[in-house]
Length: 470
Image 1 (cartoon, rainbow, N blue to C red):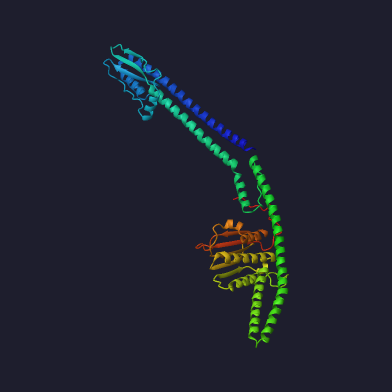
Image 2 (cartoon, helix red, strand yellow):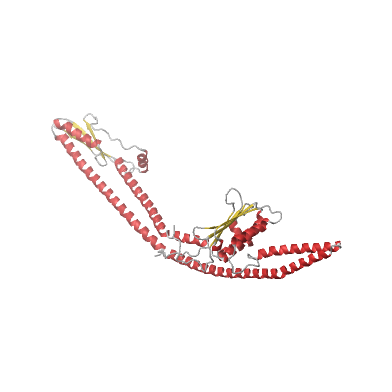
């Protein structure tokens, strides 16, 4: 169903219901007006009956007829008329009814001039002559205030109906729009999932055609992005595997070639030092050469440490000893000259439960994080933590109290180091977050947290395992 048709039918249905209520109210008002007219006509007939009794009835009934006329006049039962009764001396025998004097009535009377153009019609008058000689003068005065009061009541009722109709119409439009756009919450939730790179969520079929079209487009986009992300992850894993293989090959060649030759050169320089005991100039050159060889060998060891997560003499088929590798990595940073940073390592997992590729990724992430901290952070404390989450995933975090970043989210897309860390985590279908604060929240710094699977995933999560809407 189209959105416009849905809204039209909903609003039309509510409008019909409102008009039906308005019709019932109008019928009730008409019934009330008819009852008033009937009552006014009956009271007018009663009035003339009492006047006839006053003129031709027994003298003893005069007080009764006068009391009946007072009641009729006082209660305002005469519709749009007022009765004025005077004796032969011009004294009023009935109380005068004062018209409504509220500000609203006076304003309404001012807006409505007399229909007869200002010249008041002559009210009907006649005399009652009793047989005993008593005379009464009767005058029926027109009462426009009564009609104005009733018309004001009718106008107020009409305005009330229009106001109620407008309010109910707005309410109907609001309810119709809310019902029509309720599926938008699912669409917004799906967009939020896609913004967090979770492309496994799929929108169900929606009732409205426009929203269904949007949902299908989002599902297609998510499917395409998921396939692209999967292809990118596979390619990234292949590239990183090739890089690690190349690192291992270079490390073996450096160890086998340069390492052995440096060992031989140090042996030769030791022999030269022993043979030049009586030749100070030659001995100085030999000792300097030995120092150069030692420095080159230390530099080579450091390079090998950065190239490989394994030592050259370890078996390639053995699982990575993650705790020992991270501890040795931190020791190498602690032993650097003029090092004032305090490093803490906390591992709360069984390192043998972590797959080799995941362990290697953690090692490389730690390498890159420590390098970035040494280059930019000027931190005094660095905490590295590895723990197992309740959902079975692995959480790795590195926190420092250094300079931090103004916008870690944007920096994760700009700096090569942070981008590389992000891509390593994504290659394993993990999640990475960066926060511009130290964990205790009392000082600035940078916290990087990644959640990784214990084993390398073979594919993205199934689309059937969709998160439920809140």
